Length: 265
Image 1: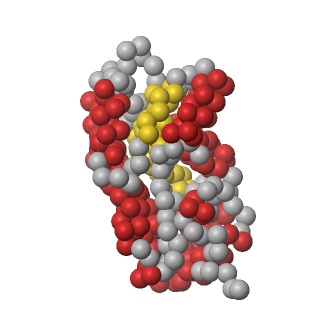
Image 2: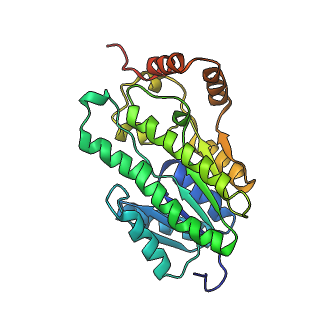
């Protein structure tokens, strides 16, 4: 696969809002053309117009619900059909579901696993093969400080992010003799629509100051371009993870439970 005119392309899932959109702006500013993957056709069209007008780049849009079976394979097929080589893959799309595990809708939990784990694994597998064949490329995985600590009231979400971190670290070692890099971005609670979609606005975590998605994106972008393995965004989050590493697993989990439990009425 090759780009017809040697243009640079970054593919971003969930690239029409939140951290994904801020990353899209940073890539566009550095003259990367974009392939944006999201579910909302109208939002894709709006962001395409906005970014192409502001940055004079090409934005290819792919409307796919990555929580659906085989959606990742369809994304890869559409990119391949356009003969686009993806220089940078950003697996940003991800969702959570707030509440006790035993009371959650199992089908909803399986959708989250499909999106956060299966789609991320598939896209990484597909595009990493191409990058290794071309001896160049970068991957940015959206982890979370949830990657580091089990999360009562968001048990499945935390587990999926732990998977992303573990998978990325293992692959990084496997390809360490190549020119391809994998970076994991770990933000904390960030001011995006994540909490509304997860039904989490009643959690105590909403009482804290949320991170600015622009700052999170900048941290991730800088780490990616520097070829770093992992970056925890924000001093507060760095200190929190450092402190949790000094605790037993059960202590760290109890601490996270206190942060995420429902607010008292």
